[in-house]
Structure formats: C-alpha cells, structure tokens
Image 1 (cartoon, helix red, strand yellow):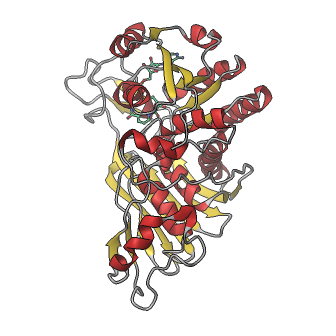
Image 2 (cartoon, helix red, strand yellow; image 1 turned 30 degrees about the horizontal axis):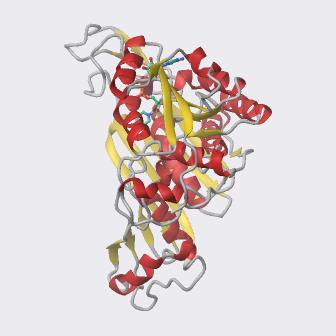
Image 3 (spheres, rainbow, N blue to C red; image 1 turned 90 degrees about the vertical axis):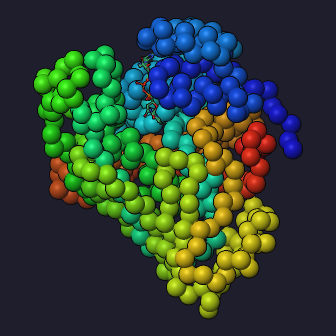
Length: 412
Ligand SMILES: NC(=O)c1ccc[n+]([C@@H]2O[C@H](COP(=O)([O-])OP(=O)(O)OC[C@H]3O[C@@H](n4cnc5c(N)ncnc54)[C@H](O)[C@@H]3O)[C@@H](O)[C@H]2O)c1
C-alpha cells in the first residue's frame, strides 16, 4: 500500500441536507486524505450543528477564503449559490470541489472555467458517483468489448415534483432547490446520467432537444402547508427530451421530466449485447448484460482492453458466466457503498501527487453544455454543435476491498 500523503485541509460552505446526511460523515470518517477545518452556512445554526457534532470550527465564508491553511473549499450550497461561492474561493487562490451542477447556466459555468484557468487552481465538480463501483465496472466491461461496439444509449428519469409531494418540505422557509434556477430535473438528475454517459462514451459532438417548464405557476396544494392555496413560482426548466451524438459515433436519448409519474431506464446497446445500467445517483447497483450469442462467442479477456489494470478477479470468474444469455456482471471496483466525497478525496490525492483529478471541471462543463445545447435547440429549432472538450478520466484501480482500504485506489 502506498504511503498516505499529508491530508489536505478543507473548509466546507453549505451545511444543508447533503452535508449533514453524507458529506460530513464521509469526510470525517471515510477518507483519511481529507481534513475538515471548519464549516460555514448562511444559516448560522446549521453550521453550528455540524461543528458541534464533528468538533470542527464554525467559520464565515470570508474566514474560510482567507485561512492560509485551507487548500480546498467544498461548495455544498444549493445551485443558485454555486457561482458566487466557487468564484470567491478561486479568487482567493483556493481549489474548489463543487456539488452539482457547477452553475445555473452555461454563461456562469464559462466564467468559472475562465477564473480557474486564470488563477491556476484545481477545480472539480460533482456528481462523483461515476467513480463508484458499478459505474467503474460498467466502463471496464464496455471498454473490454463485452457488448461489442457501443451503438446507442437511453437515459430516462421521470418523477413528479409538486407542492403536495412529500419531498416538498412543509416549512415556508425551506428552499426546495429542484424547482429553482440550476436545480430543475434536467440539471439535478440529468447531471448523474450525463456524467455516467461521458465517463463511458467520451465527449458529445452535437445535440438537439425540446425542453421547457410546462407549469411555471403551481399552487401549494398540501393542506398542512402554511401557504396552502397560494401560488408557487417554478423558475427552472423541468422537462427535457433530447438527442445526443457522441464523437465515438454512439447516439443517445435524454428523457427527463419532473412533471409526470415515475419511471427509470438507463440502457446501453452494442453490436453484440445490451447492458442495463444502474441508477447513476447510487454507488451500488446491478449491471445486467443481455447477449444472444454467448455460446458461440463467450466473453474473452484477451481482446482490446482485456487484462486492463491487471484484472485478476474477472479472469477467474470467466467460466461461470460464459453460458447464460442474461446475467448480472460482478462488481470489480471499490466504493459500492454511499461514497459521496470520493471525487473530493481523489482531488486531494491529485493535489498531493501532482496529477489531474478524475472529477475535473471540464467534464462538469461539458455536461452543462449538453443541457445548454438542448435548451438552445428548443429555441432555435436547430442542431447545437458542442464547443467544449474533455478527456475521459483515468479509470480507478480495481478493488475487492471495502472500508478504508479502498482509499488506496485513489492514491495514484
Ligand atoms: N439533497 C440531496 O439529496 C442531494 C444529493 C446529491 C447532491 N446534492 C447537491 O448538493 C447541493 C446542496 O443540496 P442540499 O440538498 O444539501 O441543499 P440545502 O438547501 O439543504 O443546503 C444548502 C445549504 O447551503 C446554504 N447556503 C446557500 N448559499 C450559501 C452561501 N452563499 N453561503 C453559505 N451558505 C449558503 C444554505 O443555507 C443551506 O443550508 C446541491 O448542489 C445539490 O444538487 C443534494
């Protein structure tokens, strides 16, 4: 095992749901490379609650930006604050890890990319679920030719966000970001699907789409809500139905709405098989392959991509899955439990080891441009040609370890 480099001191801004539920426990207990110095929030009680629970300092945003020891600002605010917090942190020379999406629109995202370049700071963006076990395994199997040459991908997520939905908090002061700028389903859930697609298939060449917000004025319909009967304004696109052409030649569909009943599908087809992908919001999941010709052409690790990363486990399991036509493929990588923050941990190793971080902002920026392109296409009625590029991030090393031993796969 490689030696643990000196932990990276971070300051956390935004102590809401995801900070409390996932990030703080993971940053404090799961990743040895992360050293949380202090936390800040616009609502002081939220920062105090986190500080008291974990024994770190309550700080203001300004104190975090000006603390010479802090190297990275972890931006866990809601999307409308992402621009301001990431910008201010980078202008103070800090590295930034920002929850999804990086900004509310492509213009803000472009400005953040410019600032990161100008200041020469490391800038990474969520979602980091693409570093999880099933997603890394999916990419490995695709690269190794398990479905032949990839042909098409379909991403579908539909649900209903309405003021009577139990997700909708009954407190009049709570800000339900998925119905506000940068938080609509195309951004919020779209970010997960896009990052997975980009990690497996690489950059997108052009897109088209139909997008909109079909009911910008809703009413509070939950009888217990203090604003029952009043208007509620939705100021973000809530639906997007798009088509993508990847540079590798794959075509895809992107089908998301928060105005319908629920459904989910994420399927990648190839010339020799079809892969049912998992839920890209999760680190664990099932990878189900369908192949009609397994008897004539059993899986082989000898072809292109075979033996990648020295995959010892997969080769030994080959005999077991050479026959059936539908089967669940084994997970070959670590981080199959709730591991949000793994992108931040990877960034900390990237800082210490002088390499590129896997959740590099160029991926988040490309994902923002895909959504932007579909919104533009809706307006113009034309195909949108992508302008941004990114390199597929390096895969993680395979791991059968669980617990803290998994962290060694990030230390490269
Ligand atoms: N809630 C989830 O299940 C979930 C899951 C994955 C990712 N995320 C992402 O995490 C981010 C935060 O989501 P959340 O659900 O925790 O939101 P939230 O509204 O519960 O928390 C955001 C917090 O940021 C604080 N804040 C806002 N602007 C600020 C500023 N300028 N300075 C300091 N504090 C500020 C708010 O007061 C609030 O406490 C979003 O980008 C979201 O997409 C959320």
